[in-house]
Image 1 (cartoon, rainbow, N blue to C red):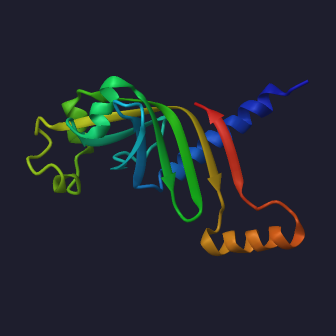
Image 2 (cartoon, rainbow, N blue to C red; image 1 turned 90 degrees about the vertical axis):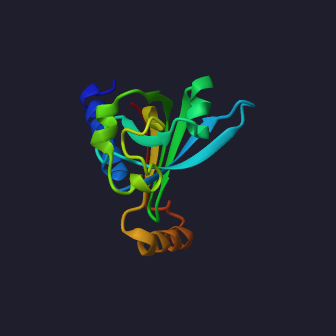
Length: 167
């Protein structure tokens, strides 16, 4: 018999850990399908630190990520650092919300959009995750190397967390 309370608690913990990992990332690779059905990855800057299942990006409405999403809204997001890796699957779309664009606007964005937040080319891309997988190797690069060497010497598995979850 499965204890549903434990399962819910474990899922809640995994979701909280996922959100905690994502808040430390500034950049992401969003993968879309082009007109020929090929996977294409694009580097984008994450515009919101709080992860609730959605990620927000400011993009040109004529950019390849935006135009690809008109034909097929399936998308993936990958995030990577020295000791954390996240893969999200879901869908994405351009959202027409000028107040959200202004809310997310910051000086860094002005490097790409010199006409400001009211520039008609500024698009708001919303990625909505429906599943996630993450790997976390706490302690940074040195701890990862030590865990790897320990695993090779002792035959024990590498000391890292790996979770898959539906969102």
